[in-house]
Image (tube, rainbow, N blue to C red; front, side, top):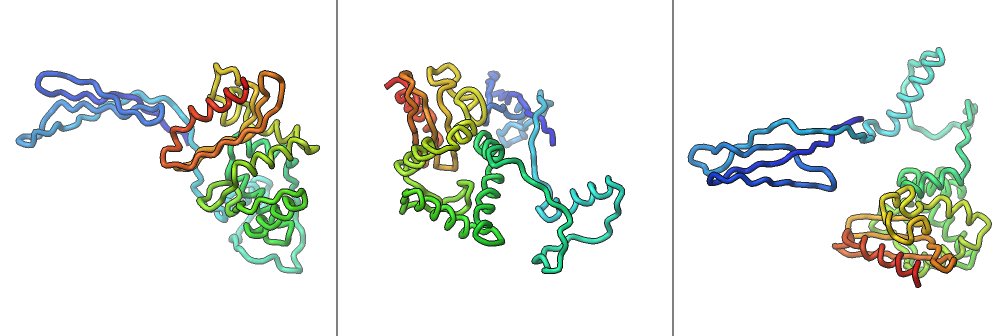
Length: 277
């Protein structure tokens, strides 16, 4: 879906003077309105809406539920292949006499993790979490996934008693882990055989992913792989910094505060300090 990103000015006239006001939200300015006339006896200005200058932008929305989407997609592909579909979609357990119709293999895990981490794809992270749960028996469920992960951590000697896993993507007010233990996990991952795949999946500061527009002129640009995370009242970064002396350092910063949205300068200062120390 394409939508216009509108720019304009609100012009207010009062006492023979004209004041120019701009209202902004993010990088987009507000619609254009000229407050030049008054309601008789009200003392209030009547807005006259004028055309705004709009650029073209893209937004993606899910307009169907998962069941309706799967049915509509299958129906169109089936028709495109010359078939005809007259039935309806139903959700039910797979009967034991069911015959396997087709198998579709997903991309390799290393490819999926790259998409998840580079662009902070919460839906894919959730699906991966549930897939881990399915290894303990179908269907994949959050509590099963949490158990699988805890058992894996314990098998590596990583005991995180405060760890809470609920949603799997981080979009939860219950999920938690300490900065110390997340740093310990990063250290363990760095020593693992799949370290190169993990590090390459993380956004590279000032270069790509969710860190593409951060620290472009800083000394740490291109020298840190970091995963970002944000909720209202929460900001976090975690990953690796290659410092000025060629050492790879694990970095974790988690801010829980009503003003956490203002923590970006603190994150930037920490990364600069780790790089230069």
